[in-house]
Image 1: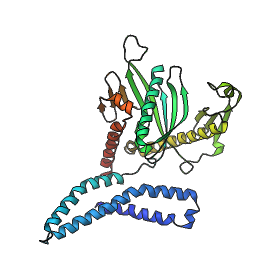
Image 2: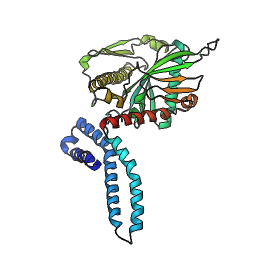
Image 3: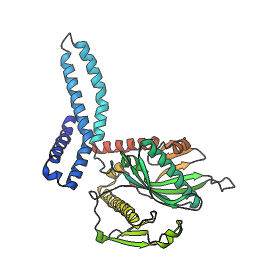
Image 4: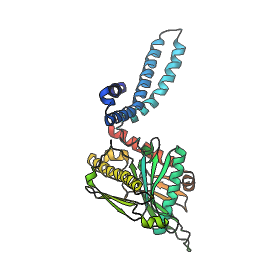
Length: 355
């Protein structure tokens, strides 16, 4: 019975709350942070467990009242109402019973890079950026540009955003991969459709509780920043290149005038990239079934096509095609694609878990 499956979650939640009130835990910030996160992640399932228990009790009481001639009509009404609610509540609980992605509640670094297609790819980075910014605005999320590298035609070679808010990673984790665009460039006199691509990486923002990098494993180089910025850029060694020696991952940062601020930003992104690499290795060990629940995030995986002449957007993972590309991009209506993706992966996971 479903109530039996919910019991361990309720017990665990109560146990964690008891631990959080002990002086030993309150004096250990790392332990307290970890336990608080765990308690927060259990809250939705504990609330649904109480709701489910109350509903089962209502059904049982209503069935007993059916034997009472004076209460039979009221009992029938209560029973009908409660039994109608039951299947929906059971589906919600089954989804909550699925193994939770530990990164779902985290903020993210969203990295968009121009791929094949030259200037047209760089311009599409800008278009995709605007669409994501509108989507973030619709959700009430905060966005900070961490790093940007523009090209000569008003596009971007690469841009990195830090997006903060509720359930950011859980919504955007399926955006990682290759986004292909088909359209007629403004410079194309023959009216031919060009195909270009950009890659998107979604990395959870991490802190020392998630990953701790040994300072001995980090090589830091400082240099003069290049590009626009006047005399300051040429005279001050404010640019930073940071390398994580064990993985070979490198981050360069020169967006800030202060070397210290560039170091802080570079370390943030370095942590996220190292964490992403370790997560990818972990998922590879777990296998394809679990990987589908969090999205592969593989840059090389072609996930979506944006065809402007046909006003068509297609997500290849679930075969979803919508003929409202311009409206989705202009108004940031990505939920029209993201929600079916989440539903698809949840259905796959439920089947896999036998729920």
